Amino acid sequence: MKILKFKDKQKFRYNKKIIIKDLVLLISVGIHQFEKLKKQKVKFNIEISTDPNLKPDIKTIVNYENIINDIKKLTKKIHFELLESLSESIFDEIFKNKKIKKIKLKIEKMDIIKETTSVGIEVIKTRI
Image (cartoon, rainbow, N blue to C red):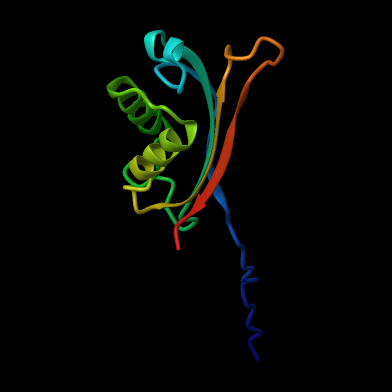
């Protein structure tokens, strides 16, 4: 009599995130006249949740370098009066990639109020 051994089939749940931490760009943003005349340092922190079933392959992953380049291109083009409108433009650009499920975006103006290190917003947006 032969004894059959079954492989232990464990199931896992994955969450995969791309993290971009402390990206600092000189951009045109703000409602005040002096903000419209001179670019200021703005810090971006981004967590991007992707489809957890993506194979670890250069052709299928979400490339953080591409995300950074997209943000650079977007912020060079125009003046944003509000961080909220800047965040929506970033969401629109990043969510063009269908592999992306959720974005947590924190944007901070670094030099606008002397008594603070930074001021800004944090927004989380999820694809439904």
